[in-house]
Image (cartoon, rainbow, N blue to C red; front, side, top):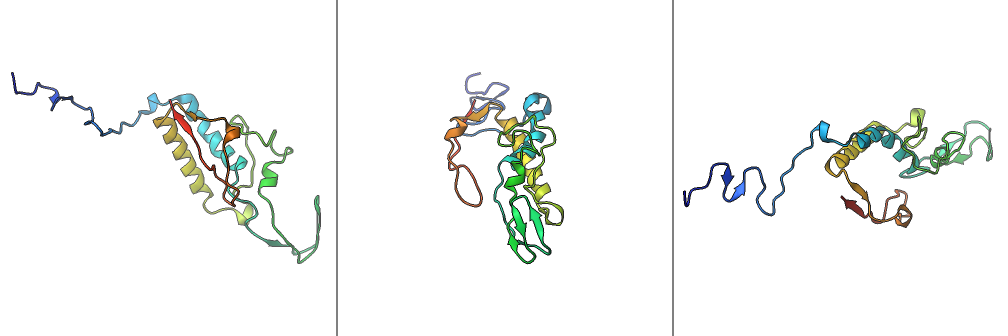
Length: 170
């Protein structure tokens, strides 16, 4: 048997194992996914855009008539820049609005606008977020922040994002 590979072996490696330096992608079957994390994804898809608005006040609206707002009067012809962040953080709309909560029932937000000003890409954004969170949960079930959330720095631009995001892949 010398010089002849044994059945079930390939060049000194077990069949199915990747060559050194090469990884093999093995998708997890749905029954192996951590169910408790997957159940949180729909809540996260609603809560994440509510709590972290990518930009605020993208459009200018002109009043077509005099309007009394809680912040003061707006006269016909005056321009205003509506805030999407304000209503998302209103305690009369969302209980404890500054806190990220996946147990929030029916989180209400205006991140994607409203009525005729509703974002055409809102459905795509939600699908992308749902798919990314599902993939991350599946591929890295122990994914966790490597530093306390309070220590994460954020950009001060119109599109907010972390300046760095250190994670652990447990």
